[in-house]
Length: 153
Image (cartoon, rainbow, N blue to C red; front, side, top):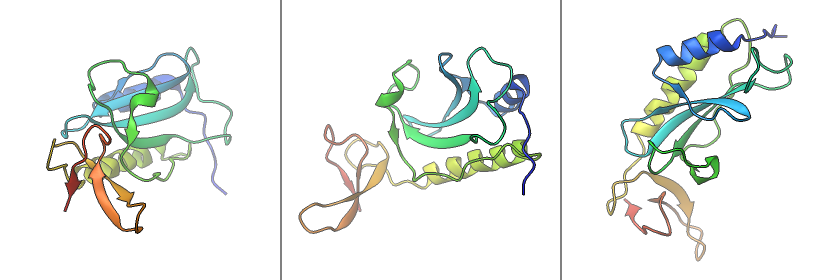
């Protein structure tokens, strides 16, 4: 069984800052985010560290989560609900001895996966996997649907 470690907030922040992430939401759980080269795409890291605390919650109760999102107007502070997921759930990073290396690997994996997402031919935004209701056929549709109805081939 893995031996869990308490992660210090300063060490967590230093590691993510070194990789180009910035803290984005000071209320509630501390969240770090980094813009991807694809416009509107971000990688977000949920830390399991509450705002105002110096360490993560009790050991073993949760893990660090990495997600890839499409968030229009990345430079603005939009509510978290306005971001749309781009990738399926990624494997969580457990708070074990090698958490830094594991977290960096997950962030790199998310970066590469976003780079491989086909862009919408109509607006250039990323596409997401969708299923047509009429016949169940899978396709890649614009993440901005219903504002944009573009479909990638």
